[in-house]
Length: 143
Picture 1 (cartoon, one colour):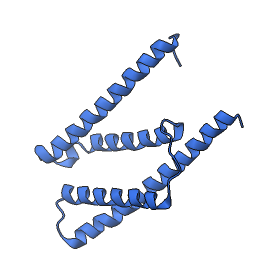
Picture 2: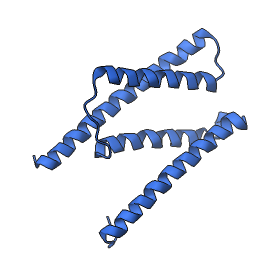
Picture 3: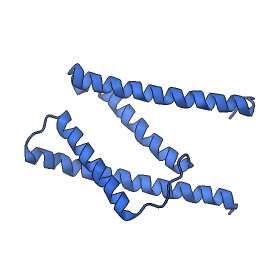
C-alpha cells in the first residue's frame, strides 16, 4: 500500500523505516543487556521486553529469508552443521553466564535445551530460505 506516493517517496520511506527499525532493535537490545548485566535488575522486571525483542528478531530473520530479502545459496550439510554448532556454543555460553551456572551438570542441562531450540531454529530457517528461493524462482520463471 503506497498511500498515493510515487516510487521515489516509497523508496525513501522504506529506507527510513529500515534504519529506524534497526536502531530501535539495537537500542532495545542494549537496554536489555544494561538492565541485566550492568544494573543487575531481576529478569522478572523486563521479561516481557526480552520476549518481544527475541520474537521480533527471530521473526524478522524468518520473514527476510522467506520473502527473498537475502539470496541464500545452497549450503552444504557441513556448513549447516557448523552454523548449528556455533549457535549451540554461543547460546549455551550466554545461558550459563546469564544464570551463573558453573557446574558441569548445569551446563549440560543448558546445552540440551539450547541444542533443541537451535535445532528447531536452524531447521525452520533452512525451510523458510528454501521456500523463499522456490517462490522467487516461480516469480521469475512465471510458473
